[in-house]
Image (cartoon, rainbow, N blue to C red):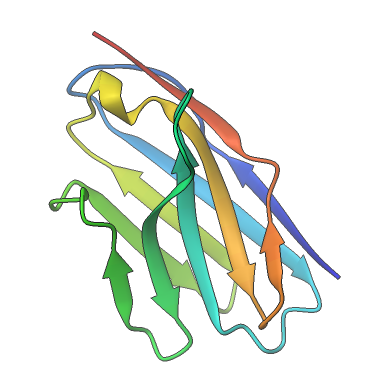
Length: 114
């Protein structure tokens, strides 16, 4: 089994920045990819950014440079930095890991006030 624990969510004003962290533990020897997803109220869950096993990064279509994903293999952590935030970034952000089975964290709430 794999456990993913997110942290760093909270309330931030529009224009501000936030860094989310995810710590992975358990059977994480064959990680195919790690990613951040988000789900806003009333909307489907969408992928924000993904880091593949070879280091390649893929961003969601909406990202446009405001999101930076980073994986530290030694510390088994995945971070997401979000800059110039808008109220549309309000969502629950989830950490995801594939080994290759799918594992999800519990999510961390991010709220951006206007």
